[in-house]
Length: 426
Image (cartoon, rainbow, N blue to C red; front, side, top):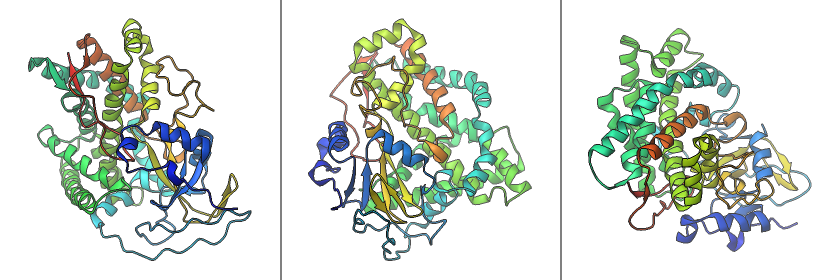
């Protein structure tokens, strides 16, 4: 049986797709829900039931380096669909030229598998429990109100909601959580923005070089901050991780402390900023939904979930087949690369009624914006708290908020979906 391919359905570099990928996702789900895309050397998976099943399958993982020597993934021809899996093709070994970036990924919760994932998660998850997150509410509320005060004090009728509000919220919260001094926080966002470029399949050498440089600078900063916390520990996550490491380096290595401090900033920032940006754009384009939310603040909980589903900030993430498997008639040998499209799954009519409708009352809402399985986002409770506090305070402070300027445009990225700016009028 011939291997199904995306053919002309999937053109991930075209400007039209990058601005609105959802019609393409609909066609893929209907015509080629599991298909090979030669441009990335990967299988594109778009149905909710398939993405959900694969996220829960322990025969898949985020990386292969715990089983094989660390190499840059090299695209190869798709395996032929057959009844039984065959031996994996062996790509040529290519040493990773981006050592600094590779170092901060190696110990990250996002990039390790059990048993290491279990060990590291147990060492750091205390700060993200619902109880601990609830205790942070007062501080998050004060930070949000302070940012809105600053916006209001400038007296500008029009402003960029991303730059002036959405970006500072999660950076400030995560910096507080990690114990980063206020005077040094301005360095975090540029590092984060540069590093996430490495995850894009269409990255250029310049983007990769900038990501590697930022990773090296960020790691050096975290190591210096660890030394400061060791000398004078505080009530923050980095101090606690340093204490765990010093008590038992086998439980949490120094590299894992560095990698996960950077992960918490990067992941926490990207999720919250872009749910606020993409979600507020959807809300302002659906005035009937905005009116309903203003009339009933009790809708905020379901509204946040719908914002994450409707225009997911993380469009897809990669998984690798760790051992030969057959899935939905496809024989995938060890090493096969999959792109699991959360955003396409979140618009699947098999799972969601009227999936292209923005509905703040949608319940249930089994979206995959935070992932699923072993790599479900550890910071999801904190992200939901930040989003609830930020959005409710924003709409209360500016009751007449509306879109302003030219129609908003999205960055030309495939993995992370976010706006270049979001001009609004208060």
